[in-house]
Figure 1: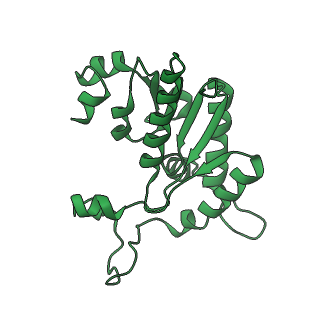
Figure 2: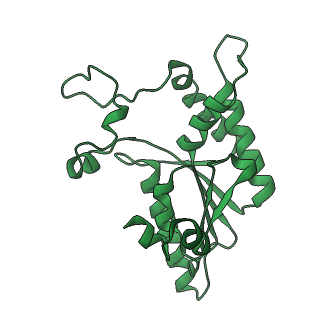
Length: 203
């Protein structure tokens, strides 16, 4: 039987990138490490939990931001985000500010201390984790004769393809911040993008 209650799936990188660039004031740990993204990310989670009241929460993680299977299908996939002078045969290196890179492990540690599940997968990005968990939740609920209740939190419109009113799967789009979420269901897709459902958006 499916676990009951609302499942919130957070596109973690989407949020911590927003936090890094959104928290302008320099915030430093006692040792001088910047922590503005950590502070902003945790503030966003607190707002989401308080306002949406999820029963379950998963911070979905990019274990690989540019998976090989996507590059094989589309060689240009995220190529604009590759750091210059990539070593031949080495792992892809994403252009990210050093001040953000040092904060990502701190965010991971904070999630662990708070008891919030963080889930990634070898060779996968957060989108893959979110799609897999959404599909599993909808199938479990359907098998029990119920509707799921899934909220996907992201600033990535690619995930609109998961929207499914029958599912029930909504995307909470953070384009204007987590305090001004755009709740995307099929009605919103039709109104703003002229497509009937998430599959139509993906096409």
